Length: 135
Image (cartoon, rainbow, N blue to C red; front, side, top):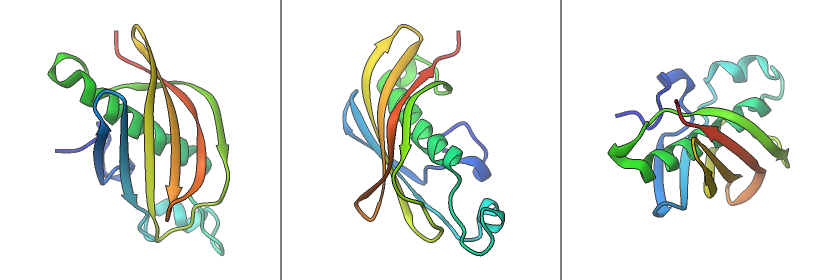
């Protein structure tokens, strides 16, 4: 079973663990150097695009939210807002990307999360995002 509603080429979670039920979780994704975006971004010094770092964070947040709703709600969410997001370090291929999400607040069909992305224990990106549940 997939951890996200995305196809295999756009899933940024290989595994996901709820570390504090209803509140925190962490996902991991091995960034295989053969992933297509690494070929062109940038050919001589490949990096994971910033928008895909945001997507990885959103997928971790979605997996956490789905785990809190269990069978009572949707398992598919949309990124509604990027409240803030900062890329601290570039993310190269051939590393394990860890995406942690913390549920800050539920706002009806919306949920706000704090997210932190790490490589080898170092923060590479962090921010706040809002997901929406389907109506």
